[in-house]
Image (cartoon, rainbow, N blue to C red; front, side, top):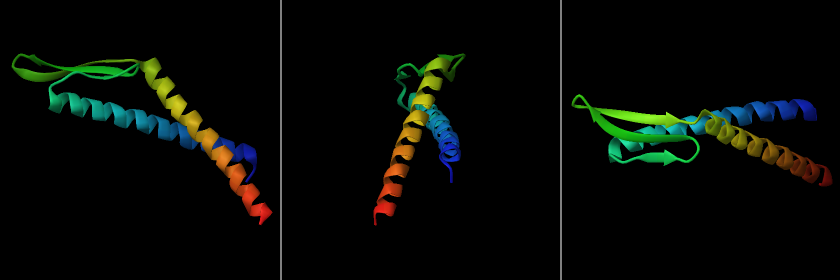
Length: 97
């Protein structure tokens, strides 16, 4: 497979992993805020607190879309860099044998 196609596939996989990681962090933070009765903050991504409105429990949150994009992008970039470097290293090891 050519390097360009591998790079694009790694970018797609890295982007998917980044989005899923941020999503699971948000879901985990919501669950923690609901069950622990405390404020939950993921710095630069979201702030969640629990309150009571009309006798019912409510979760209030303030998301930071830019922080979410940066976090997902950083995970994607890290994935692509690691996969591209490991791919070169394993190809070199195979040709040396």
